[in-house]
Length: 241
Image (tube, rainbow, N blue to C red):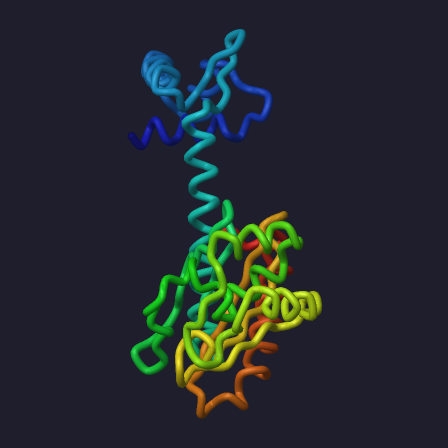
């Protein structure tokens, strides 16, 4: 396995391919051993051979892509934990995918627990900051399509009464401004969500606080927005986990 990995690493260093003899020399493997391992790696799809030269195959490229994705996810999860501890509030990450609200990751602690999902998050997007922030990033047709499938219904006494009033409210949301809600999804809880651009996908990071800490909500959301901006800038890529 170790010798095969050395060969893969060596091939990866040759953008325009390399012949078996060169690979054997650079990895200090006996030529028969190198030939045997190269044939096996080609058979398994980790390498491909063209005109006597070896290149990385689809299986190796999938591994590389998967590894990069895992590293990116780990970076975001670690960052969410840091923000959670610094802000003193649970942090949520969600995206709008294929017409559905998808809460991808939640970072909380026993001392600052996440809001209990007592009503399906996908069906109650009109009632929580995560859903409202995602819906505010969609065009009018996509919003109406979502609300046709998941009509506005009272979740608490503070929830929007109907789809028309919610749509008017979403139209007033200014671009890149935190979306806040107070006890619309869960009594005794206030939430704020900030919009994030992930390619063409609507996404958001959000926090929740108990009602008695409501005065902290907007400053905490603004700090989260600043930290998310720093992460995106340092990674030079969109959050995608």
